[in-house]
Image (cartoon, rainbow, N blue to C red; front, side):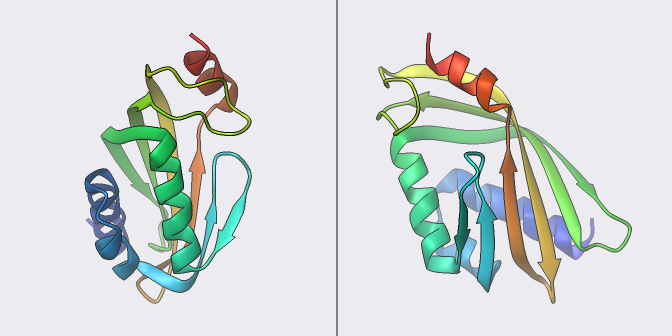
Amino acid sequence: MTDAQTIASRFMEALNERDFETLATFLDEDVALDSMTGQRTIGVDPLRMSVMSYFRHFDETFSDMVLMHDALGQRVAIDATARGVYRETMPGFPAASGQSYSIPSVFVFEFENGAVTRLSHYRNIRVFEKALAR
């Protein structure tokens, strides 16, 4: 496993454990988070707040992870299954009533000098909204 793959894997473990201090150790100070809703957040603290807010609405963990990387080791993608419970209504989404869901999710990490400089989170938002509307 490359260093970037190791960092991405450890990042996902820390994410599942809600270990925000460990997450911050992997991030560049000016990290960009491109969320699945199309919003961009810049910086470690804003990223942490964005992720914490997300988890307030969605009690979610990631499993069945498959790591992929480019030839230069500057990008790593993780294809995972997001499993969770929708516990608090998030603006722009259906009303929360404890719906459970399982949906494919992809994270793309970009690295520079051993730190994550950009993290993008993707999933089919229409399929996700349909799962939440049940």
